[in-house]
Image (cartoon, rainbow, N blue to C red; front, side, top):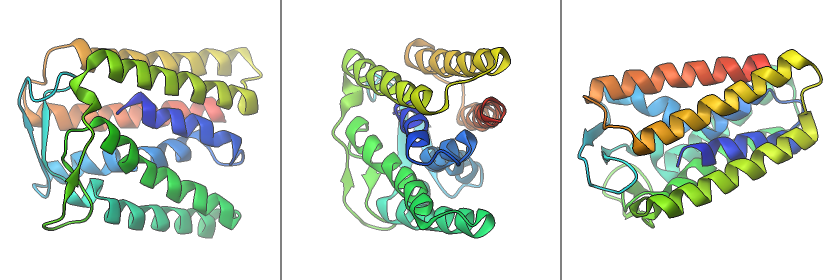
Length: 213
């Protein structure tokens, strides 16, 4: 799951309009923001194994701290509390951010093979395997992305030419990254993978922040 996560970030603007799109993206992508850093530190592990699923060559060997249901729940509560403490937003905003963080686990369970842990340690791992079908994965994610973007536009449509260009540039970059990952060659190494993930995340968050100002 990739643009499906961003779909929820866009859609959440409808229920939490004062929250920056960049913050909503941080929430829905929190697991994938934390994961490459933990891989670089040797705390979590990923391997490149072409053919392990039709959609991606990545074998997520171990990622209990960034992607388990328990830790994402804790991360979500923490993010919501920090945001409310810093901005004095309503408690409902904290709940929205927490649910966005946890939604990452739910969506990944739908797409991944059974590698999504419930908690760190020897816990069961879940996954419904949507990634075993490229057409089905693309159909689901593109539909989600379209609906999420439509909801965002209904609440926060750009009112200047610059913001309009910025928004559609951001949308185009997300789609290019998505289809490039789906149909492009596998990453040359784990190191290249994680640094690309970090750079892409920074670029996306800066773009979202700029568009939403």
